[in-house]
Image (cartoon, rainbow, N blue to C red; front, side, top):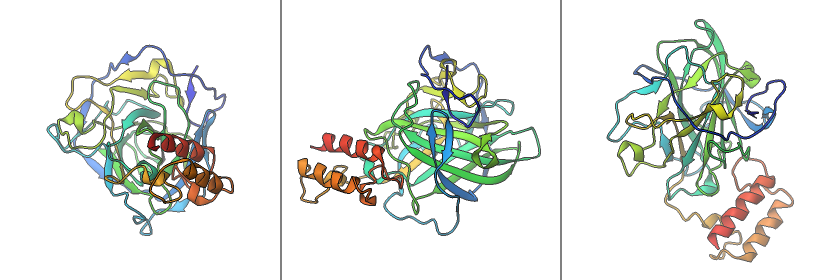
Length: 331
């Protein structure tokens, strides 16, 4: 049984439990990088049966400027600073294919959780059919669960359409994507959860022929205690086989003795240094109490956008859970 990721016939859902396997592949360093920018973006959700686009495609361009204080690193498994910085990322060679990866994340302790994360940096190797070109769409989501637990499918995310990219271009692609003018990625309510990066084509309707995330590690693991966020050693891959599903045999430990310990290369940007409980003081009287719960409930019932606790642009039951968790923690 499997936890299904992509829009594939016969989708089923189960847990990703069982033994954690050791990666039996040899990481290789890759120094050449190629920056690309999305052509368009769209909000999308993950369900047990696949990926569903829930918003129109929005052209990505100069109009995407910061709408708020989401310009500080809150989780860093991509930006290369610290004792182990080499200027390189790692991958498993051009023949390796990984349909999507799920890795855990714990954001910086002073992250303002309700603000959300408005920018993501990540890198991938695009093998596709060998040579030629293939349309590249990448899905990025966050959720409450961590590998190798059952995917919780808590939050919506975004599809990033890069148009047609060259296959095996001699280096890895990377992208720094700021969506803060139109939405955010929710921060897990406790500060710990996971992020998902999936490789798609045909405007997000099918799995890419072959791709894989590039690999790096979190800042604290690099010997830099000031770097934001932490990450454990376990990662879920879709490689045995590549079918849009995670199974118990695809949960691996990436504690391979490298510096840094490896994992999917990704970083998220948000707000740090504020009072994370301020967002749960709904009535603004400086105290988080039962009146704030009533205040939020009165906004949430008519779907007032002010009740969009998780910052995904939609007011639904996930916002109620988001506010309840924060309200309980801040009382």
